[in-house]
Length: 135
Image (cartoon, rainbow, N blue to C red):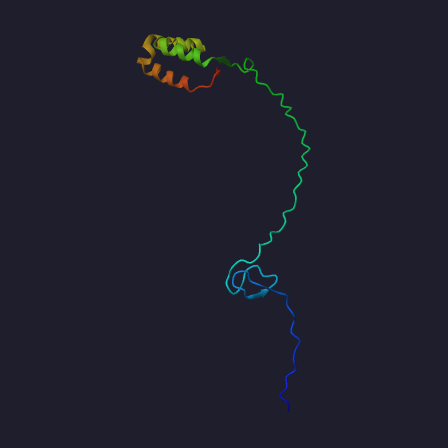
């Protein structure tokens, strides 16, 4: 028997040299397998261009309006009520301003619920919106 081997044709692969260590590497290689350095820029996939066609022409057509008088609600100015409470709160003047005559009389007789009601009302009025609504 012959010990001759048949030579298989080798696939010719395109190669290049590493810029850092000079090793022979595949042409498509981005990182050198010998030294581990990056040889080429990593190609990023292109992002698709996004087109937004917004033809929204909607407008607010809300015609609901709150008629405070129809609901039995009165609007009052926060600052008028606050200063009435601050200076004449022990007499209940701010309660008369709001239209709460019964509480105004109670404040008048008890000197602002002995000062405690007057103090609490001053703080509450500071945190109310302007104008505020009273039933």
